[in-house]
Image (tube, rainbow, N blue to C red; front, side, top):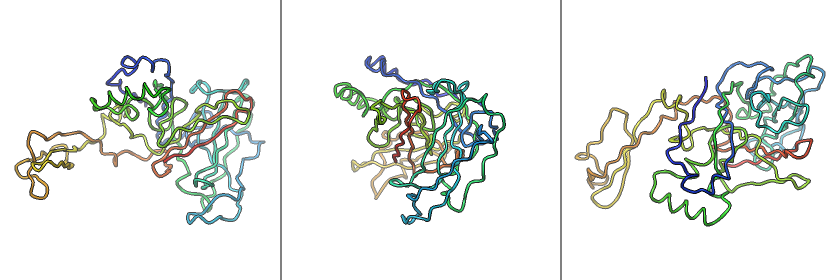
Length: 332
């Protein structure tokens, strides 16, 4: 099944021409549970791993138990996070002679943020004669929130712009902020960078931007964002195929006779009666009532099955160095 991001309600590059030169293409992945093979691109699925190559393990002693206490060293196997063939995601910086990108992590919390530790490999699929079967995860010594479910992907290309904090000039930021005051749209949330798990593009930052350089001083570029949510800025980013089948309820906002405001949530067929509604004895002003449809996010399935406390893990790669070093940032 494919997914389609709706057209944006506003052409921000027409309003702010400087943005036209800042576009990047992101590949939204839309993980959905399903069996895959080592010959397919996937998230959390089997990897095209040579049978004659040892499976990587993590024996580092800087991983932490839930209470923040170091646990004994255990050489736990890394687990599959992603596999991308160049035929499906050609946007990745594949080194010459390779056509497969594999992302693994240690499914335990490592210092300093109690997050997984990544490893990224690049392969030539034609060189793999016999495929290994991945070892079972060490569930006893793993964090269950870091064990991805096998998922199919449905790559979709979208054009993105940098969030407000990454714009190149204060003047452009100030103009966009002034424009936002007259709009229902938030530039960073609704019109710039897509939420969810994706390849490349601009980052959907939760905190301040992180712009790493490799050890040789080259600016690194986004490789992969792994997210535990796809619902940020849903009005413009939720794919039409999901909107058409998800249940909605209503957020009802209203003003009060005493000058205050309030809100409540109703089912899709319910209506607010201003004559009987109110807060602390102050009645609702009928002409102030505004209804806003809101998806029932609890009905959205948890597909990839990873949890970072409402955060994102960002993987950066140096496209210049032949060994493709990576850096990882976590934000929540």
